[in-house]
Length: 217
Image 1 (cartoon, rainbow, N blue to C red):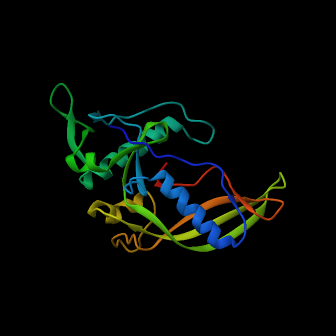
Image 2: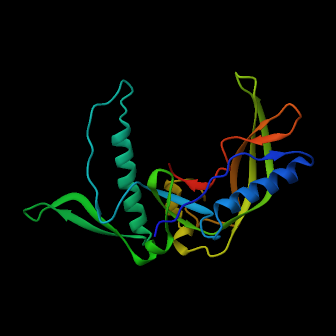
């Protein structure tokens, strides 16, 4: 059964700002994660199993870019990565003569089924835990061309609940840099961003919505 994350939209802040920011972000993250199992997620892509990887070709634009090629290459890399982590099975694909094609068949493992969820536009993600906002690390304000004061808020967090072994693997650094020197990822020390805009009464309003801790596009 597919499970979906929710994104909340507008909330307003006033008074003791950092404490209010911390509270609003926490409430927003919890609203997205009522089960306490989808606080941290890693994106695989839009894929249905069983799935066989393949090559996508096409014309490049003046910058040498084709978004369909890039998207497929990213998906192929992610499938290989998550098979290394035990969330997917991987078997070599062969042609009609039994020769390897250089591509692979993928399917969910029992472990992968346990942590598999879906997100915006039916993107498959693997998730775990609940994010707890510990403190506001920094705020950066900048004026846009539309005379709107944007406020970037960075916050420190830790993850509570089950943290599976696959989620500690430094292999995940290929999606988002989360540990140094090939060390296991420490989910007791996280760092993320939330966007606000400053109102005329000096309060803050959330821009776009609470940003979930989903790594990979």
